[in-house]
Length: 560
Ligand code: ADP
Ligand code: XUL
Figure 1 (cartoon, helix red, strand yellow):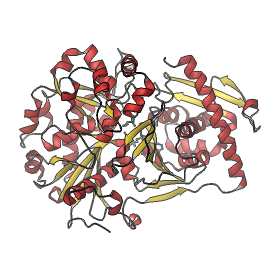
Figure 2: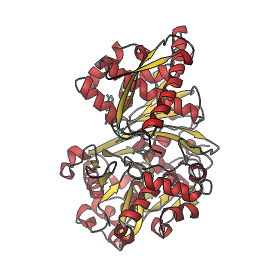
Figure 3: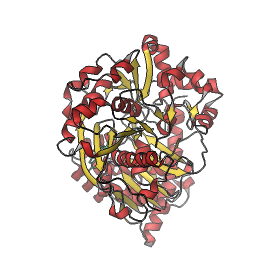
């Protein structure tokens, strides 16, 4: 049975990401009718961010973003978008936020949210609303001590993972909050509400504190993944009086509230426009890519690189993350996350390919698959997976034509020639993703991969992905699946609200996906020739060799 949407409505999805704020607007046929972006570094240069963030020179691993920049970006985006979209037609809005980042609302700020003056921009009205103006974000790696303390308090890393879906990770919000409590007690005590980036923007849109959604909430080391409720044990292990500062949890498809009068008066949104719970960027991408088959794998190549899929059983382990599926309350999403994604590819492009993606592609095309045994580990920033400090490690595999792992030896070298360096970063990233995805129980080989994120527009990169994983690679119409997913979730939340019950999201596009802007298109077919299969076998060997070398690097350089 299909569901029809109201006549002529529009659905607006935002994505508040590391480097930009984006918006995608869908009509009732689920076709993209408009999109817009505000790029932080170039359009809001007065915040002096680099890649949307500040890397604190005085504290190793501390990375934050200016909270007010995200608000000014919203002012600017709404101004830019109003020339393209009739806001009065928007039936529902939802959004996506970079995961884990946190915002600290000062005591008394809910009153600010409730009384916004439509004659003024948002920015000046929030200057006194936060107990700190610097939001810790997902790139931060300064909370190792707090991670170990929390794990110890709950009975170990595996116990925490079984409870919350992940072992403690530096970027996760719980360890970040604990650090705030331990090191900046006044800020913690002055705070009445802690929001994630997702619930923070949703709060502005509804004019009161929005709940944290259960999916993004799983990226905090604070939520019981099975009960989808705050875990008392994890809360106590993190900081006192935390539950009241976090507020309630809500499912991702729930309505957070009606749009605040500010937006009705200033931008002419309709009073009955609903704000559907915002969620994290990876969960929104999962929705936007319409991932609903366990054999499908999605790879997002954005500021961070992520690999994700869906599963009906939650089996948290020491590696990877489990979150509730944002569009299906009966299942979960599994995910791996790499910090060294696009910014590290850009670093290699700038050093070895004349700062040009075209030259970067030429390098990839003129070097052979397997790179003559040249294997690279490139970490411009402290890496999450594996947990290794910044550094570059290059090896040449010898006796590499053999079929046995034991015979392959590696020799460390200082540098590669520029084209090989380019191939080494791309192959290295995909070999690692494949190895860890297999270890985490994701399908091998996947039935197909759907690629998204800024770098998924690069065909040469996708070709390497198809070769290393041994499956076809699909892409979506636009590489920005997070804001698209948010727009789709806005429509889904609107529908569930109208029906007064949960409605499967697939009912909105089943049988007509290709006629919407959501359909995935084949970008690179799987190699079917004998030589492709032989190549895949060799890559399988290199995956194992890479994990072996990686383990040694972690033993030598990683943190305890
Ligand atoms: P975010 O995670 O902030 O949403 P995006 O998904 O928008 O990031 O990706 C932005 C990144 O996309 C840029 O940092 C850039 O490195 C990368 N990118 C853009 N075009 C290409 C290309 N042709 N080849 C490889 N990478 C690209
Ligand atoms: C996921 C993660 C990153 C951010 C990027 O755990 O840390 O993918 O969500 O915005």
